[in-house]
Length: 250
Length: 301
Image (cartoon, rainbow over all chains, first blue to last red; front, side, top):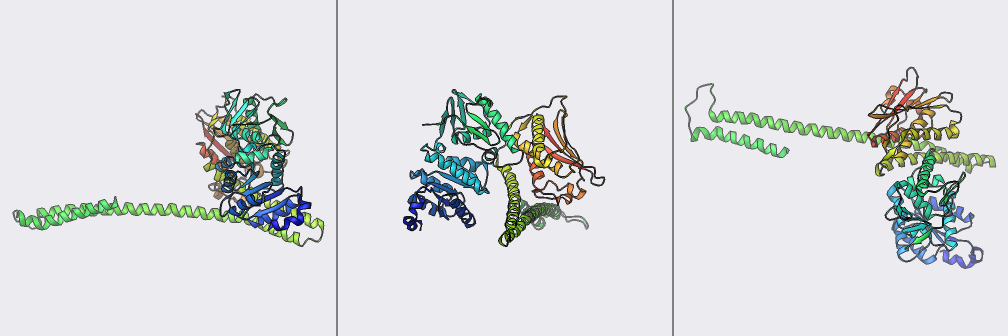
Protein backbone atom coordinates (compact mmCIF):
# COMPACT_ATOMS: atom_id res chain seq x y z
CA UNK A 1 0.00 0.00 0.00
CA UNK A 2 2.94 2.30 0.62
CA UNK A 3 4.12 1.82 -2.95
CA UNK A 4 1.00 3.55 -4.24
CA UNK A 5 1.72 6.58 -2.11
CA UNK A 6 5.37 6.94 -2.93
CA UNK A 7 5.18 8.90 -6.22
CA UNK A 8 3.26 11.76 -4.58
CA UNK A 9 5.38 11.89 -1.47
CA UNK A 10 8.81 11.19 -2.86
CA UNK A 11 10.10 14.77 -3.07
CA UNK A 12 9.29 15.44 0.58
CA UNK A 13 10.55 12.02 1.68
CA UNK A 14 13.78 12.17 -0.14
CA UNK A 15 16.08 12.33 2.82
CA UNK A 16 13.70 10.74 5.23
CA UNK A 17 15.03 7.34 6.19
CA UNK A 18 12.48 4.55 5.86
CA UNK A 19 11.94 2.44 8.93
CA UNK A 20 10.13 -0.90 8.87
CA UNK A 21 8.50 -1.58 12.23
CA UNK A 22 7.26 -5.13 12.76
CA UNK A 23 5.17 -5.87 15.83
CA UNK A 24 1.96 -7.84 16.11
CA UNK A 25 0.58 -5.59 18.85
CA UNK A 26 -1.30 -2.65 17.29
CA UNK A 27 -1.11 -0.64 20.53
CA UNK A 28 2.64 -0.54 20.01
CA UNK A 29 2.72 0.23 16.28
CA UNK A 30 -0.13 2.75 16.58
CA UNK A 31 1.81 4.75 19.14
CA UNK A 32 5.29 4.36 17.67
CA UNK A 33 4.39 5.26 14.09
CA UNK A 34 3.37 8.89 14.77
CA UNK A 35 6.31 9.20 17.18
CA UNK A 36 8.85 8.13 14.56
CA UNK A 37 7.13 10.20 11.89
CA UNK A 38 7.53 13.26 14.07
CA UNK A 39 11.16 12.32 14.45
CA UNK A 40 11.57 12.45 10.68
CA UNK A 41 11.15 8.87 9.54
CA UNK A 42 9.05 7.39 6.81
CA UNK A 43 7.26 4.47 8.41
CA UNK A 44 6.24 1.05 7.13
CA UNK A 45 4.61 -1.44 9.49
CA UNK A 46 4.21 -5.20 9.47
CA UNK A 47 1.92 -7.17 11.77
CA UNK A 48 3.59 -10.55 11.51
CA UNK A 49 6.89 -12.15 10.61
CA UNK A 50 6.00 -13.27 7.08
CA UNK A 51 4.71 -9.79 6.26
CA UNK A 52 7.89 -8.26 7.70
CA UNK A 53 10.14 -10.51 5.62
CA UNK A 54 8.21 -9.70 2.46
CA UNK A 55 8.32 -5.94 3.06
CA UNK A 56 11.98 -6.06 3.95
CA UNK A 57 12.75 -7.71 0.62
CA UNK A 58 10.34 -5.67 -1.53
CA UNK A 59 10.56 -2.18 -0.10
CA UNK A 60 14.22 -2.06 0.98
CA UNK A 61 13.83 0.00 4.14
CA UNK A 62 16.92 1.73 5.56
CA UNK A 63 16.38 0.14 8.91
CA UNK A 64 14.23 -2.56 10.54
CA UNK A 65 12.87 -2.89 14.07
CA UNK A 66 11.68 -6.46 14.67
CA UNK A 67 9.68 -7.80 17.57
CA UNK A 68 10.80 -11.28 18.58
CA UNK A 69 7.45 -12.81 19.48
CA UNK A 70 5.27 -12.59 16.38
CA UNK A 71 2.79 -14.94 14.69
CA UNK A 72 3.84 -16.74 11.47
CA UNK A 73 7.67 -16.53 11.70
CA UNK A 74 9.13 -15.00 14.81
CA UNK A 75 11.45 -12.03 14.58
CA UNK A 76 14.54 -14.12 14.97
CA UNK A 77 13.61 -16.36 12.06
CA UNK A 78 12.85 -13.31 9.91
CA UNK A 79 16.32 -11.96 10.65
CA UNK A 80 17.95 -15.31 9.93
CA UNK A 81 16.19 -15.62 6.56
CA UNK A 82 16.99 -12.03 5.66
CA UNK A 83 20.68 -12.52 6.36
CA UNK A 84 20.69 -15.83 4.53
CA UNK A 85 19.19 -14.07 1.51
CA UNK A 86 22.05 -11.59 1.67
CA UNK A 87 19.98 -8.70 3.00
CA UNK A 88 22.20 -6.67 5.35
CA UNK A 89 19.61 -4.07 6.40
CA UNK A 90 20.53 -2.85 9.90
CA UNK A 91 18.14 -4.41 12.41
CA UNK A 92 17.18 -3.93 16.03
CA UNK A 93 15.45 -6.81 17.82
CA UNK A 94 12.79 -6.13 20.43
CA UNK A 95 13.12 -8.90 22.98
CA UNK A 96 10.29 -9.96 25.26
CA UNK A 97 11.82 -12.11 27.88
CA UNK A 98 15.10 -10.95 29.22
CA UNK A 99 16.78 -14.24 29.92
CA UNK A 100 20.44 -14.72 29.29
CA UNK A 101 19.97 -17.25 26.52
CA UNK A 102 17.92 -14.89 24.46
CA UNK A 103 20.39 -12.07 24.93
CA UNK A 104 23.21 -14.17 23.59
CA UNK A 105 21.07 -15.40 20.70
CA UNK A 106 20.15 -11.95 19.49
CA UNK A 107 23.82 -11.25 18.80
CA UNK A 108 24.30 -14.58 17.11
CA UNK A 109 21.64 -13.87 14.51
CA UNK A 110 23.30 -10.68 13.43
CA UNK A 111 21.06 -8.07 15.04
CA UNK A 112 22.82 -4.73 15.23
CA UNK A 113 21.33 -3.96 18.59
CA UNK A 114 18.53 -5.09 20.79
CA UNK A 115 16.16 -3.63 23.32
CA UNK A 116 14.18 -5.31 26.07
CA UNK A 117 10.47 -4.67 26.34
CA UNK A 118 9.12 -2.57 27.95
CA UNK A 119 11.12 0.40 26.72
CA UNK A 120 10.66 4.15 26.33
CA UNK A 121 10.03 5.44 22.81
CA UNK A 122 12.98 7.81 23.13
CA UNK A 123 15.23 4.91 24.01
CA UNK A 124 14.28 3.11 20.81
CA UNK A 125 14.74 6.28 18.78
CA UNK A 126 18.23 6.74 20.20
CA UNK A 127 19.15 3.15 19.32
CA UNK A 128 17.69 3.48 15.82
CA UNK A 129 19.65 6.67 15.21
CA UNK A 130 22.90 5.20 16.47
CA UNK A 131 22.61 2.11 14.26
CA UNK A 132 21.56 4.22 11.27
CA UNK A 133 24.45 6.62 11.78
CA UNK A 134 26.87 3.77 11.61
CA UNK A 135 25.35 2.16 8.52
CA UNK A 136 25.05 5.49 6.68
CA UNK A 137 28.69 6.32 7.34
CA UNK A 138 29.47 3.28 5.21
CA UNK A 139 31.17 1.42 8.04
CA UNK A 140 30.40 -2.28 8.13
CA UNK A 141 28.21 -3.57 10.93
CA UNK A 142 30.44 -5.14 13.54
CA UNK A 143 27.58 -7.16 15.00
CA UNK A 144 27.81 -9.78 12.30
CA UNK A 145 31.52 -10.48 12.81
CA UNK A 146 32.69 -13.33 15.01
CA UNK A 147 36.17 -11.99 15.60
CA UNK A 148 37.07 -8.39 16.28
CA UNK A 149 40.28 -6.63 17.13
CA UNK A 150 41.44 -3.24 18.34
CA UNK A 151 45.17 -2.56 18.74
CA UNK A 152 46.57 -5.55 20.65
CA UNK A 153 43.16 -6.74 21.80
CA UNK A 154 41.29 -9.53 20.01
CA UNK A 155 37.96 -11.07 20.94
CA UNK A 156 36.43 -14.28 19.69
CA UNK A 157 32.72 -13.99 20.25
CA UNK A 158 31.90 -17.61 19.58
CA UNK A 159 34.52 -19.00 21.93
CA UNK A 160 33.89 -16.17 24.45
CA UNK A 161 37.62 -15.46 24.70
CA UNK A 162 39.64 -12.27 24.72
CA UNK A 163 43.38 -12.03 24.17
CA UNK A 164 45.79 -9.14 24.63
CA UNK A 165 49.08 -9.46 22.76
CA UNK A 166 48.18 -13.09 22.23
CA UNK A 167 47.80 -13.65 25.97
CA UNK A 168 44.44 -15.01 27.10
CA UNK A 169 42.65 -12.56 29.41
CA UNK A 170 41.06 -13.86 32.57
CA UNK A 171 37.59 -12.29 32.34
CA UNK A 172 34.34 -13.28 34.03
CA UNK A 173 31.48 -14.03 31.59
CA UNK A 174 29.80 -10.71 32.47
CA UNK A 175 32.96 -8.70 31.88
CA UNK A 176 33.40 -10.41 28.53
CA UNK A 177 29.81 -9.57 27.58
CA UNK A 178 30.42 -5.94 28.53
CA UNK A 179 33.57 -5.84 26.41
CA UNK A 180 31.76 -7.53 23.52
CA UNK A 181 28.96 -5.00 23.51
CA UNK A 182 31.36 -2.06 23.82
CA UNK A 183 33.47 -3.35 20.94
CA UNK A 184 30.51 -3.99 18.63
CA UNK A 185 29.28 -0.45 19.33
CA UNK A 186 32.37 1.75 19.19
CA UNK A 187 32.10 5.56 19.12
CA UNK A 188 28.78 5.28 20.96
CA UNK A 189 28.31 6.43 24.50
CA UNK A 190 26.90 3.38 26.24
CA UNK A 191 25.09 4.22 29.46
CA UNK A 192 25.40 2.10 32.58
CA UNK A 193 21.66 1.46 32.46
CA UNK A 194 21.90 0.11 28.94
CA UNK A 195 24.73 -2.24 29.86
CA UNK A 196 22.76 -3.44 32.86
CA UNK A 197 19.73 -4.12 30.73
CA UNK A 198 21.67 -5.85 28.00
CA UNK A 199 24.24 -7.85 29.88
CA UNK A 200 22.52 -8.45 33.20
CA UNK A 201 18.96 -8.37 31.91
CA UNK A 202 17.72 -6.25 34.79
CA UNK A 203 18.30 -2.92 36.41
CA UNK A 204 18.08 -1.75 39.96
CA UNK A 205 19.12 1.48 41.63
CA UNK A 206 22.45 0.17 42.90
CA UNK A 207 23.08 -1.62 39.62
CA UNK A 208 25.12 1.18 38.11
CA UNK A 209 27.78 0.45 40.73
CA UNK A 210 27.78 -3.13 39.56
CA UNK A 211 28.64 -1.93 36.08
CA UNK A 212 31.43 0.26 37.42
CA UNK A 213 32.90 -2.69 39.29
CA UNK A 214 32.96 -4.80 36.11
CA UNK A 215 34.43 -1.92 34.18
CA UNK A 216 37.19 -1.63 36.76
CA UNK A 217 37.89 -5.36 36.38
CA UNK A 218 37.90 -5.02 32.61
CA UNK A 219 40.26 -2.05 32.56
CA UNK A 220 42.61 -3.78 34.92
CA UNK A 221 42.73 -6.81 32.63
CA UNK A 222 43.30 -4.57 29.61
CA UNK A 223 45.91 -2.52 31.46
CA UNK A 224 43.91 0.55 30.51
CA UNK A 225 44.50 3.73 32.49
CA UNK A 226 41.16 5.56 33.01
CA UNK A 227 42.98 8.92 33.14
CA UNK A 228 44.59 8.32 29.76
CA UNK A 229 42.54 5.55 28.17
CA UNK A 230 43.45 3.58 25.10
CA UNK A 231 40.33 1.39 24.94
CA UNK A 232 37.52 2.48 27.23
CA UNK A 233 36.81 6.08 28.06
CA UNK A 234 34.50 7.26 30.84
CA UNK A 235 32.01 9.88 29.73
CA UNK A 236 31.21 11.78 32.90
CA UNK A 237 27.56 11.43 33.85
CA UNK A 238 26.76 9.50 30.68
CA UNK A 239 28.52 6.17 30.58
CA UNK A 240 31.39 4.63 28.70
CA UNK A 241 32.61 4.50 25.14
CA UNK A 242 35.02 2.25 23.30
CA UNK A 243 37.49 4.61 21.63
CA UNK A 244 39.96 2.26 19.96
CA UNK A 245 39.42 1.62 16.23
CA UNK A 246 37.75 -1.77 15.81
CA UNK A 247 38.53 -4.09 12.88
CA UNK A 248 36.70 -7.20 11.76
CA UNK A 249 38.87 -10.32 11.52
CA UNK A 250 38.17 -13.18 9.11
CA UNK B 1 4.75 -52.90 43.71
CA UNK B 2 1.19 -52.83 44.87
CA UNK B 3 0.24 -55.33 42.18
CA UNK B 4 3.05 -57.70 43.17
CA UNK B 5 1.96 -57.79 46.79
CA UNK B 6 -1.71 -58.20 45.87
CA UNK B 7 -0.83 -61.22 43.68
CA UNK B 8 1.42 -62.62 46.42
CA UNK B 9 -1.42 -62.30 48.93
CA UNK B 10 -3.89 -63.99 46.56
CA UNK B 11 -1.43 -66.83 45.86
CA UNK B 12 -0.95 -67.34 49.59
CA UNK B 13 -4.70 -67.45 50.08
CA UNK B 14 -5.04 -70.00 47.26
CA UNK B 15 -2.31 -72.27 48.70
CA UNK B 16 -3.96 -72.03 52.11
CA UNK B 17 -7.37 -72.97 50.69
CA UNK B 18 -5.85 -75.89 48.74
CA UNK B 19 -4.17 -77.13 51.88
CA UNK B 20 -7.44 -76.92 53.77
CA UNK B 21 -9.28 -79.13 51.32
CA UNK B 22 -6.60 -81.41 49.85
CA UNK B 23 -4.54 -82.29 52.92
CA UNK B 24 -7.21 -84.45 54.59
CA UNK B 25 -7.93 -86.27 51.31
CA UNK B 26 -4.35 -86.97 50.18
CA UNK B 27 -2.62 -87.60 53.44
CA UNK B 28 -5.47 -88.23 55.91
CA UNK B 29 -3.60 -87.67 59.17
CA UNK B 30 -4.94 -88.90 62.55
CA UNK B 31 -8.38 -87.48 63.25
CA UNK B 32 -8.12 -84.39 65.34
CA UNK B 33 -9.60 -83.68 68.68
CA UNK B 34 -12.20 -81.06 69.29
CA UNK B 35 -10.44 -77.67 69.65
CA UNK B 36 -7.45 -78.99 67.87
CA UNK B 37 -6.76 -77.57 64.45
CA UNK B 38 -6.12 -79.69 61.40
CA UNK B 39 -2.79 -79.32 59.63
CA UNK B 40 -4.31 -77.87 56.46
CA UNK B 41 -6.55 -75.55 58.41
CA UNK B 42 -3.50 -74.42 60.39
CA UNK B 43 -1.56 -73.54 57.29
CA UNK B 44 -4.64 -71.86 55.88
CA UNK B 45 -5.16 -69.68 58.92
CA UNK B 46 -1.51 -68.64 59.15
CA UNK B 47 -1.31 -67.76 55.48
CA UNK B 48 -4.73 -66.12 55.55
CA UNK B 49 -3.61 -63.95 58.43
CA UNK B 50 -0.38 -63.02 56.63
CA UNK B 51 -2.21 -62.27 53.39
CA UNK B 52 -4.69 -59.98 55.10
CA UNK B 53 -1.82 -58.22 56.88
CA UNK B 54 0.05 -57.63 53.63
CA UNK B 55 -3.05 -56.31 51.92
CA UNK B 56 -3.84 -53.93 54.75
CA UNK B 57 -0.25 -52.67 54.78
CA UNK B 58 -0.07 -52.15 51.02
CA UNK B 59 -3.35 -50.30 50.83
CA UNK B 60 -2.54 -48.08 53.82
CA UNK B 61 0.81 -47.04 52.35
CA UNK B 62 -0.81 -46.32 49.00
CA UNK B 63 -3.54 -44.27 50.61
CA UNK B 64 -0.98 -42.29 52.60
CA UNK B 65 0.98 -41.53 49.44
CA UNK B 66 -2.08 -40.29 47.58
CA UNK B 67 -3.01 -38.17 50.53
CA UNK B 68 0.39 -36.45 50.77
CA UNK B 69 0.57 -35.98 46.99
CA UNK B 70 -2.86 -34.42 47.08
CA UNK B 71 -1.78 -32.21 49.95
CA UNK B 72 1.31 -31.02 48.03
CA UNK B 73 -0.87 -30.39 44.98
CA UNK B 74 -3.35 -28.47 47.06
CA UNK B 75 -0.57 -26.40 48.61
CA UNK B 76 0.93 -25.65 45.19
CA UNK B 77 -2.47 -24.72 43.83
CA UNK B 78 -3.04 -22.54 46.83
CA UNK B 79 0.29 -20.71 46.53
CA UNK B 80 -0.24 -20.33 42.79
CA UNK B 81 -3.71 -18.94 43.39
CA UNK B 82 -2.35 -16.56 46.02
CA UNK B 83 0.39 -15.44 43.68
CA UNK B 84 -2.09 -14.64 40.90
CA UNK B 85 -4.35 -12.88 43.35
CA UNK B 86 -1.47 -10.71 44.58
CA UNK B 87 -0.28 -10.03 41.05
CA UNK B 88 -3.80 -9.05 40.06
CA UNK B 89 -3.95 -6.71 43.03
CA UNK B 90 -0.52 -5.18 42.42
CA UNK B 91 -1.24 -4.51 38.75
CA UNK B 92 -4.81 -3.35 39.24
CA UNK B 93 -3.84 -0.28 41.22
CA UNK B 94 -1.41 1.30 38.75
CA UNK B 95 -3.69 0.29 35.88
CA UNK B 96 -6.64 2.09 37.50
CA UNK B 97 -4.39 5.10 37.98
CA UNK B 98 -3.34 4.96 34.35
CA UNK B 99 -6.93 4.79 33.13
CA UNK B 100 -7.94 7.69 35.35
CA UNK B 101 -5.01 9.75 34.09
CA UNK B 102 -5.98 9.05 30.48
CA UNK B 103 -9.56 10.12 31.16
CA UNK B 104 -8.23 13.33 32.68
CA UNK B 105 -6.02 13.86 29.67
CA UNK B 106 -8.95 13.40 27.29
CA UNK B 107 -11.11 15.83 29.25
CA UNK B 108 -8.35 18.28 30.14
CA UNK B 109 -9.51 21.91 30.24
CA UNK B 110 -6.07 23.51 30.35
CA UNK B 111 -2.46 22.74 29.51
CA UNK B 112 -1.79 22.40 33.23
CA UNK B 113 -4.43 19.66 33.45
CA UNK B 114 -2.77 17.82 30.59
CA UNK B 115 0.68 18.10 32.14
CA UNK B 116 -0.60 16.75 35.45
CA UNK B 117 -2.45 13.89 33.73
CA UNK B 118 0.61 12.90 31.70
CA UNK B 119 2.74 12.99 34.84
CA UNK B 120 0.28 10.69 36.66
CA UNK B 121 0.07 8.33 33.71
CA UNK B 122 3.82 7.96 33.48
CA UNK B 123 4.06 7.36 37.23
CA UNK B 124 1.52 4.56 36.98
CA UNK B 125 3.36 3.08 34.01
CA UNK B 126 6.68 3.14 35.90
CA UNK B 127 5.08 1.30 38.77
CA UNK B 128 3.89 -1.47 36.50
CA UNK B 129 7.28 -1.59 34.88
CA UNK B 130 8.95 -2.00 38.26
CA UNK B 131 6.74 -4.94 39.19
CA UNK B 132 7.39 -6.63 35.86
CA UNK B 133 11.10 -6.06 36.17
CA UNK B 134 11.25 -7.71 39.58
CA UNK B 135 9.12 -10.61 38.38
CA UNK B 136 11.51 -11.12 35.53
CA UNK B 137 14.48 -11.04 37.86
CA UNK B 138 12.86 -13.81 39.90
CA UNK B 139 12.19 -15.89 36.80
CA UNK B 140 15.68 -15.20 35.53
CA UNK B 141 17.31 -16.41 38.72
CA UNK B 142 16.28 -19.99 38.11
CA UNK B 143 17.40 -19.95 34.50
CA UNK B 144 20.57 -17.96 34.91
CA UNK B 145 23.93 -19.46 35.67
CA UNK B 146 25.36 -18.03 38.85
CA UNK B 147 28.99 -17.06 38.80
CA UNK B 148 31.11 -18.93 41.31
CA UNK B 149 33.98 -16.62 42.14
CA UNK B 150 35.46 -15.44 45.44
CA UNK B 151 33.57 -12.40 46.68
CA UNK B 152 34.86 -9.92 49.23
CA UNK B 153 31.65 -9.46 51.18
CA UNK B 154 32.88 -6.54 53.31
CA UNK B 155 33.73 -4.53 50.23
CA UNK B 156 30.45 -5.50 48.54
CA UNK B 157 28.32 -4.46 51.52
CA UNK B 158 30.19 -1.16 51.73
CA UNK B 159 29.47 -0.57 48.05
CA UNK B 160 25.75 -1.28 48.49
CA UNK B 161 25.53 1.02 51.51
CA UNK B 162 27.15 3.74 49.39
CA UNK B 163 24.69 3.14 46.58
CA UNK B 164 21.69 3.28 48.94
CA UNK B 165 22.97 6.52 50.49
CA UNK B 166 23.33 8.12 47.07
CA UNK B 167 19.66 7.72 46.19
CA UNK B 168 17.75 11.02 46.37
CA UNK B 169 15.12 9.43 48.62
CA UNK B 170 17.78 8.56 51.18
CA UNK B 171 19.53 11.92 51.40
CA UNK B 172 20.48 12.63 54.99
CA UNK B 173 19.68 9.09 56.14
CA UNK B 174 21.94 7.62 58.69
CA UNK B 175 23.35 4.22 57.83
CA UNK B 176 25.90 2.78 60.25
CA UNK B 177 28.16 0.19 58.78
CA UNK B 178 30.11 -2.12 61.05
CA UNK B 179 32.40 -4.65 59.49
CA UNK B 180 34.29 -6.80 61.96
CA UNK B 181 37.91 -6.94 60.93
CA UNK B 182 39.15 -9.35 63.59
CA UNK B 183 39.44 -11.93 62.26
CA UNK B 184 39.61 -10.75 58.66
CA UNK B 185 36.52 -11.83 56.72
CA UNK B 186 37.04 -14.86 54.52
CA UNK B 187 35.82 -14.61 50.92
CA UNK B 188 32.49 -16.22 50.02
CA UNK B 189 32.16 -18.12 46.76
CA UNK B 190 29.34 -16.85 44.62
CA UNK B 191 27.87 -14.35 42.25
CA UNK B 192 28.91 -10.87 43.32
CA UNK B 193 26.14 -9.03 41.49
CA UNK B 194 23.42 -11.29 42.82
CA UNK B 195 24.70 -11.12 46.40
CA UNK B 196 24.86 -7.34 46.03
CA UNK B 197 21.24 -7.30 44.92
CA UNK B 198 20.19 -9.36 47.95
CA UNK B 199 22.00 -7.04 50.37
CA UNK B 200 20.66 -4.00 48.59
CA UNK B 201 17.07 -5.25 48.83
CA UNK B 202 17.39 -5.75 52.59
CA UNK B 203 18.85 -2.26 52.94
CA UNK B 204 16.14 -0.74 50.79
CA UNK B 205 13.55 -2.53 52.88
CA UNK B 206 15.02 -1.25 56.15
CA UNK B 207 15.18 2.32 54.88
CA UNK B 208 11.63 2.18 53.55
CA UNK B 209 10.02 0.84 56.70
CA UNK B 210 11.68 3.04 59.27
CA UNK B 211 11.34 6.75 59.99
CA UNK B 212 13.77 9.07 58.24
CA UNK B 213 15.29 10.15 61.57
CA UNK B 214 16.08 6.57 62.54
CA UNK B 215 19.40 5.03 61.75
CA UNK B 216 19.77 1.74 59.93
CA UNK B 217 22.57 -0.50 61.11
CA UNK B 218 24.47 -2.95 58.96
CA UNK B 219 26.82 -5.47 60.56
CA UNK B 220 29.09 -7.98 58.92
CA UNK B 221 30.80 -10.67 60.98
CA UNK B 222 32.02 -14.22 60.82
CA UNK B 223 32.31 -17.17 63.21
CA UNK B 224 34.49 -19.62 61.33
CA UNK B 225 31.61 -21.55 59.76
CA UNK B 226 29.43 -18.86 58.31
CA UNK B 227 29.46 -15.22 57.44
CA UNK B 228 26.64 -13.05 58.76
CA UNK B 229 25.25 -9.88 57.28
CA UNK B 230 22.68 -8.20 59.49
CA UNK B 231 20.51 -5.25 58.57
CA UNK B 232 18.70 -3.72 61.51
CA UNK B 233 16.10 -0.98 61.45
CA UNK B 234 14.16 0.81 64.16
CA UNK B 235 10.82 0.61 62.36
CA UNK B 236 7.46 -0.59 63.66
CA UNK B 237 8.37 -4.25 63.36
CA UNK B 238 6.65 -7.02 61.46
CA UNK B 239 3.37 -8.46 62.88
CA UNK B 240 3.74 -12.07 64.01
CA UNK B 241 1.27 -13.42 61.47
CA UNK B 242 3.32 -11.85 58.66
CA UNK B 243 6.73 -13.05 59.80
CA UNK B 244 6.43 -16.52 58.32
CA UNK B 245 5.13 -15.33 54.97
CA UNK B 246 7.02 -12.14 54.31
CA UNK B 247 9.48 -13.88 51.97
CA UNK B 248 6.72 -15.20 49.70
CA UNK B 249 6.45 -13.78 46.18
CA UNK B 250 4.38 -10.59 46.15
CA UNK B 251 3.39 -10.96 49.81
CA UNK B 252 2.72 -7.65 51.50
CA UNK B 253 2.65 -7.47 55.28
CA UNK B 254 0.04 -5.51 57.16
CA UNK B 255 2.47 -2.66 57.86
CA UNK B 256 3.64 -2.58 54.26
CA UNK B 257 0.39 -1.87 52.48
CA UNK B 258 0.84 1.88 52.25
CA UNK B 259 4.49 1.80 51.30
CA UNK B 260 5.31 1.48 47.66
CA UNK B 261 7.18 -1.56 46.49
CA UNK B 262 6.85 -4.55 44.24
CA UNK B 263 6.44 -7.06 47.05
CA UNK B 264 9.23 -9.08 45.50
CA UNK B 265 12.36 -7.63 47.08
CA UNK B 266 12.57 -10.00 50.02
CA UNK B 267 11.52 -13.00 47.92
CA UNK B 268 14.35 -12.21 45.53
CA UNK B 269 16.85 -11.77 48.34
CA UNK B 270 15.93 -15.11 49.85
CA UNK B 271 16.09 -16.94 46.54
CA UNK B 272 19.55 -15.52 45.87
CA UNK B 273 20.89 -16.43 49.31
CA UNK B 274 19.44 -19.94 49.06
CA UNK B 275 21.13 -20.43 45.70
CA UNK B 276 24.36 -19.68 47.55
CA UNK B 277 23.63 -22.35 50.15
CA UNK B 278 22.73 -19.80 52.81
CA UNK B 279 19.55 -18.64 54.52
CA UNK B 280 17.84 -15.42 55.56
CA UNK B 281 16.10 -15.13 58.89
CA UNK B 282 14.41 -12.32 60.73
CA UNK B 283 13.91 -11.19 64.30
CA UNK B 284 11.25 -8.64 64.93
CA UNK B 285 9.37 -7.34 67.91
CA UNK B 286 6.12 -5.84 66.64
CA UNK B 287 4.56 -5.52 70.10
CA UNK B 288 7.22 -3.22 71.48
CA UNK B 289 7.78 -1.75 68.04
CA UNK B 290 11.51 -2.11 68.39
CA UNK B 291 12.37 -2.73 64.82
CA UNK B 292 13.48 -5.67 62.76
CA UNK B 293 16.76 -7.41 62.09
CA UNK B 294 17.19 -9.33 58.88
CA UNK B 295 20.16 -11.69 58.97
CA UNK B 296 21.80 -13.36 56.02
CA UNK B 297 24.12 -16.21 56.75
CA UNK B 298 26.38 -17.57 54.08
CA UNK B 299 28.57 -20.65 54.42
CA UNK B 300 32.30 -20.06 54.17
CA UNK B 301 34.55 -22.67 52.64
